[in-house]
Image (tube, rainbow over all chains, first blue to last red; front, side, top):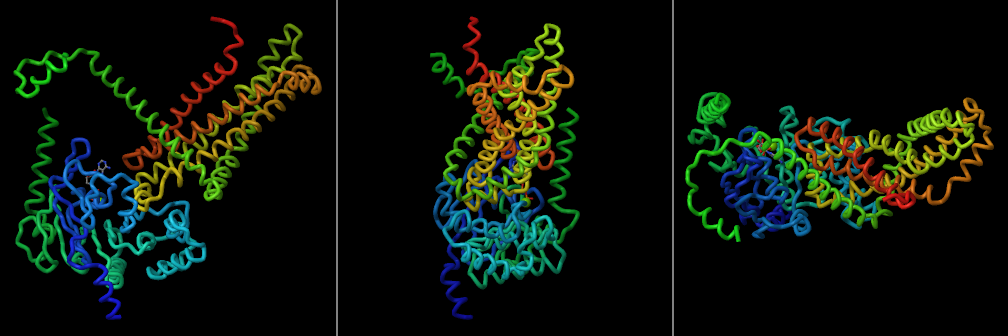
Length: 279
Length: 287
Ligand SMILES: Nc1ncnc2c1ncn2[C@@H]1O[C@H](COP(=O)(O)OP(=O)(O)O)[C@@H](O)[C@H]1O
Ligand SMILES: [Mg+2]
């Protein structure tokens, strides 16, 4: 057990920067989402990104695997600058990643087993028996093996997330990106998913980036919490320090207070919109 | 030359001059231009998608189950409607033409008339319209839903080529199913035409049959089947293309579905005409 953990730690090269975002700018039309985002994800750690809805957390994750290209700035994975890579050159980079999408993103016409087997079937020469073994191993790991022949619409949201995670883990990735893995789950399932993230890291030394706006679970799983606000990473700290921070924006977010800089900003923006409408 | 002279001016701040009021037609013209540009851009990306997916047809054996599934969904799902519509098309053609021909005592010719117009025009055309509504729209809806629920992005992160995984099976299935269903429509069209000819116009079945067989040459048949093949490609490409360009949630999916049907209809009209003109235009001898 200890040997295994030590091996995992060595493989993960803990402490080395795994993913680096440098000065990212991204806008959709005239909607500026990222404005000079700097962010480092260290290897072997679990980094949690928090921030209000629509602040660009998902957009940030998508930049890490080249699903979105920044208007300005650079993206490094393992020290490799992938900013300009096209999808062919991204293939080996993406092979290092597992990506758990916010909605699960399971293929609707494939059952649970076939969804998890999909990457192996499409991209490997493994025999059907080998595929079966690997898929069932992952399904068992996430305790959804009994639903192997169910269709995605027939299973609960929590199960869908776990199946999606099984698919994300099928290549034993070095990095796993979780987009709101616990949103919409009840407290017990949330704790289960959190436990799953922690265990995955302990067992495989995987580097995780978790997007969340659930401070409870952020505190449980994070080595480092980063706060995203108005397109920038405005604050980062280990969980305990983060929760106790006196930074006004972080403080309001952590405590979920109605009065503070975040809501003041929103009201100002609303007033701006109203003024625009009047002219 | 003019470009060179204008270049330095951009460095200096432009002098403040009251802007002239825009021409009243400026906005409509701009919108028209933008719409035309969008059509060209979409057609370009659709053509690229078609090319990439055709290249992937080398993976046909690997994806055979998926191709067969798509054939089954498209073919069986539309067979009844195609048969029904094909039959009535033949009946209508037979009746409409027969009434006029009977005035000259020429009603025997309906056999030739129905056979040739079903084979060359109406068979592929009616089949394509039904498949557009039945299969093309659901392709746009299905792939559009995948797009807005991040499934397309998930495939991309897994490095699964959507041309191979999604488009190729649908494309090949439509290329197989559309000509097959066209044959069904043609057979039933002629049956309908013959029945109407017998009961309404007094044309015996054998006379109808001989007239039909006499006029049907190989060219009429392969023109019709070629047309069906092209229509099949159009339906798959427009359906998949619209689906993949979907944005804006459930509303966007509805929009993609609706426009895929309209765009398909337009392409089918235009290509139907062009193919007939290519194969038969020379025979008219006119300008
Ligand atoms: N593909 C896209 N096209 C246009 N706008 C987008 C796109 N993706 C995200 N956005 C916009 O960017 C903003 C941030 O989105 P997102 O990263 O999903 O927020 P969140 O932090 O809640 O995950 C939102 O306002 C969203 O509307
Ligand atoms: Mg999000």
